[in-house]
Length: 145
Image (cartoon, rainbow, N blue to C red; front, side, top):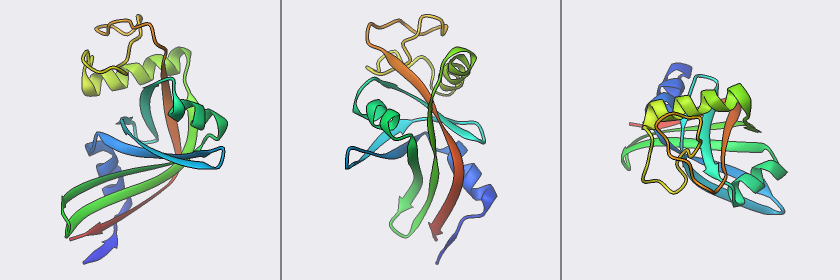
């Protein structure tokens, strides 16, 4: 049976899962990339080393976000959300770092881990890490069971 997720089911899936995909577009190209994220009920919070993903979202901050739970081909749930990319600084950046570290720990082995000297428990790295949020404006969900 195919169906639509309720608002509560959409929120539960966004909170439960840890890896989603950002879809963004710039310079005539569509770019879809997985991210680890934290969700606070309004926004998706994530980080990235500066690169194509960040450049693309800076050029066109309108984004799509997708997350799913797949048990098998006949048992899955998926959420698609639309929103706006926002780079964070100051208190917003600190809050994002706190949310991500609380969810995933310091991630010391990740090349793009949160490398900020002011976030406790996280080593500093020379490359720039950008903390950002996707401010969600619309969410839909589907399932098959």
